[in-house]
Image: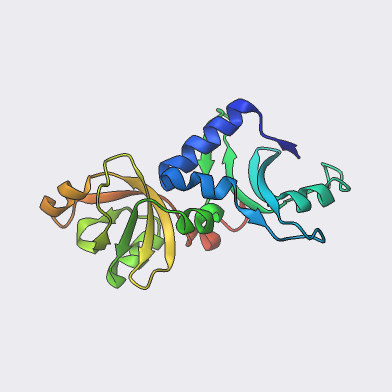
Length: 187
């Protein structure tokens, strides 16, 4: 387990910034109340094998007693690096993204299952959408009862969605909570 180097930090922060915007500051400066210390520590990003973890500094200090081979996981796995070197956010980062999301989309109850099976969000299944979304922005997908379901990339702007036919794709699927069942061996 080691801290991210400068290039890795830049790549991770750019990916998270796509979803949370200026709220990235809240994620980085979030105080941690874990551990025996009386003063709150901070959260930090650590790399173990090819996965990036978001963990409190006190937890990272306590984990130094465990050898790298024996350490399986630490904190919340927010993403992983592929063999080609690109970074992908995993579904386990959803709580972090949902709490700080800049752009949100709410689904009608009839289209929630379709999204949870890994399909894109269609205009016909759109319940609400935040303003000022442009194509390529990161979007967090919620149910109408404000339960985070997943995240994806906006395919259309907010203005274009109003004119779109019901079968047009609004959000390109990246991850959803159904992956906990579909890919449980890999998570």
